[in-house]
Image (cartoon, rainbow over all chains, first blue to last red; front, side, top):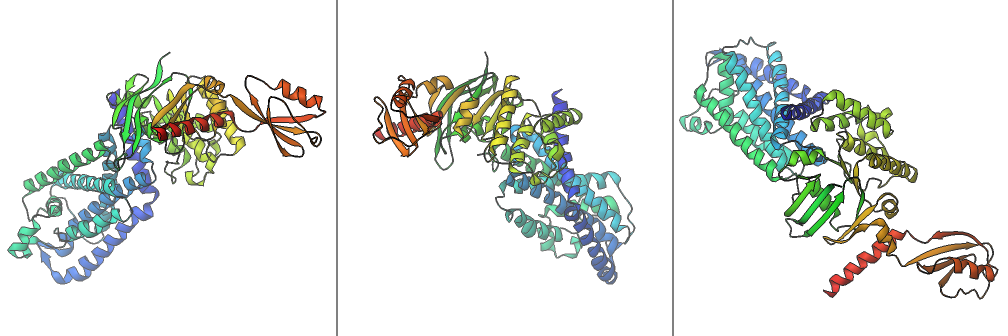
Length: 257
Length: 311
């Protein structure tokens, strides 16, 4: 009975989140479709044709998994950070705080909402990529689990950002100054094998490298890093971020006086 | 009769060092219509915030229908509906979605939630607006939407923090009727308001909070009995005679046809009318100068201030 109540509460938050990003699809689903199409045209078609092969694949084919993953990362993060901050800003977080919902259900609902948008955008970008290259799935389970776990990691990141944010500027600082550089340097457009040894080592401190390579391995069967280690890293990030987000919720940081 | 709400030695000190509550204790009986009054910054909103889980208490205990808010959180929260002072719904959502979603937060399945949302939106005159974005509603409608949202999980205790602020008189009266109706059906109501006439009209019991302390906690009737003097305004038919005097009463002339009389509650009004009639003065109408509760409220808060200054 209690489980049924908790599931209804979780489902309510998730459907509210999905309703939100589908209602404003022009702001949430359309821009990544346009941006990624431009990436495919400019980097894949125009520049990529002059670059030649990378990792044994045509450049377009090589960057497609990275671009899909980039859109999943930015949209999972962006959904939760803007939605949860908006909820705080409009004070309708109070609707959740007065209700008998455990904090873990609130977190799970928002993370699932963020992951849903990340995955929806991922599907859109994947479909668009088929206009430019052929994608085959080398390991279905690795592909699917990597994309879902990555969406969860960045949804959790977005949630933590939203808890700390006091102004609208605060929700754009991390995506602009941290997330975008890490994504660009995370092996989306190149194999880290091309980098000098020092920068290869530095790149291994970038968490996005593990996600992009794991996803690329799922689709193409090639990776710069060990897949088992990549999964451990991703799951490790989820556990750490989830524990920290729960700590913030339990202490009421940014949401309770 | 069981207690709907028990506060035991509730303290709150904010991070900036401001002490908002200084060990307040309070009991509200089941079925009561209870007023929690106090001047701005007295600690009302902090108290209600702690009961609503929006503010972390520093120490003390809150029980809602016997459930400890700290250890039996879910059971305690299910008993409670909250109508806050400020609009706090997602202004971009549809009216019906706001109410149905809130029911979902309480684990109520969508079919039942939709039925209840229809019932309360109809009851509060919002059904025609159900598909409108909440930001398009008038101020009064937004207040009623928050009441519908607070009732959708059918709480046994409803907290209303200034529910009629900014609402026109006609609508305020209709909201009073609605609140009386749900109270008669068994919902315990705790009301804060700056319209003391509202508290006097609706509430049976009252607590007054000032500077983080409860300075009065009694029945409305007992409190009003403490009022020793009331001031009445009398409208006269003709202009006042030059030397009008009423022995035993303080009298002030407002204008040529209006006087103000202070009446001690032990003396009554009969002698006023008798003496006026003897002097050929005909009274056309009479009214209270100010709300009775307002006079008491001001005197209690001033007394509290004087005691603080003396201490």
